[in-house]
Length: 305
Image (tube, rainbow, N blue to C red; front, side, top):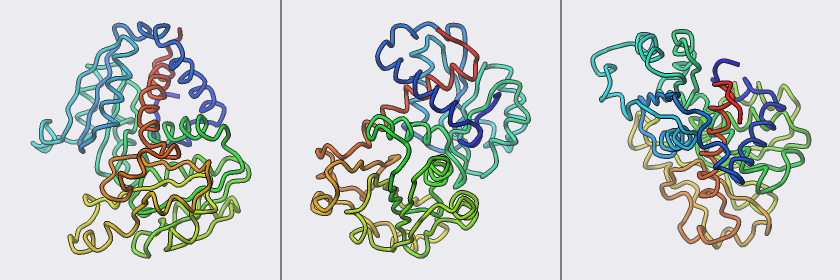
């Protein structure tokens, strides 16, 4: 495998192996501290990021490699009109592997066609975010101990939420999965995601507008923020941004072993009074991202301990 554009580029066996390596890195990080010496990761972020960009850079540095790149389109030649294709033709001559985030859906596919080194999709518009999904899968494995027989609630912006689209695609490959899709009418899951990953596979699902109605039945609650940057109309954003807010009071109705996840950043959709609850997994989830990205970089570069 040369590139990672969609989580489905990885088989379930490959995901299991990445998780095994990530967990081994957690236990014995010193064993991996020099495996990418002399290798360079380019982080090309045409859209803002905190966790994804920094965890990629931390991952490469922790493997003994180095990084270069930019954190916003305005600090690259994209501001002058340079195309993604031309950028990748050039940058792939400067680095051994590239992680790219772009606001346009499908941009990583173009990037991979014009790169001579592996390209990792670090998020493309409202499309996919495969390394966040790897982070989510590592978190689910560590928190729940399994990928099968889970009832997963996805709440908030299901229309533009690329993390939601990728996670549904990944979890649709396991047995005994049920999805509960919780969103306002305007932010429902896109038809292509529902058709491809849920209906085609006859996976049971329900669509709800109320979180309170279903929270007691869930094994996992995956909260998302309503994304201001995806809206063309400020009024619509302001009307919808706080449609779901998880509080400690609401969490009292949830199972004692439910896992609350969030790809972050959060705005107001999870109250800070939830942070101290042991079911709040989102900060552990964010930290897991560094280790699974270390495992992925090693896989794509073909390096081993």
